[in-house]
Length: 111
Image 1 (tube, rainbow, N blue to C red):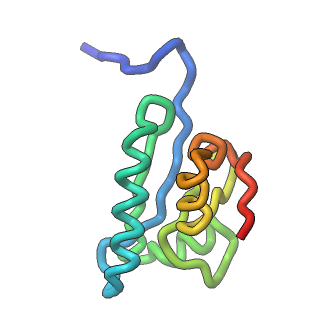
Image 2 (tube, helix red, strand yellow):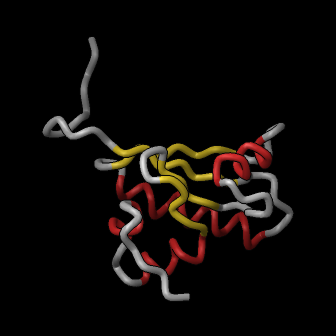
Image 3 (spheres, one colour):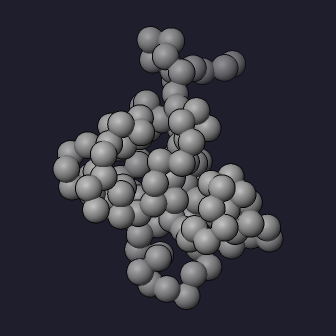
């Protein structure tokens, strides 16, 4: 039997989080963990897909998708809206109480 968890027919947005589990940087690991923790709260409106860039070709794939040859994880991306931003923009949106605006690419980052 197929059980649907969809509510009121609205499709969930896919949010891709390019992150890493293999970083030697504790700071990067903490940033990835914080994004995962915060995004768990939007599970009713968004599908959060974590892509580990430490797998073979992962970093090159992230940079190709985001069209930035120097970008580092963590980064957030929407199939529908494009690159949402990195950790600093995400963190500022959360602190400003604007997480949903950030996920709709409507958050203006002053930084």
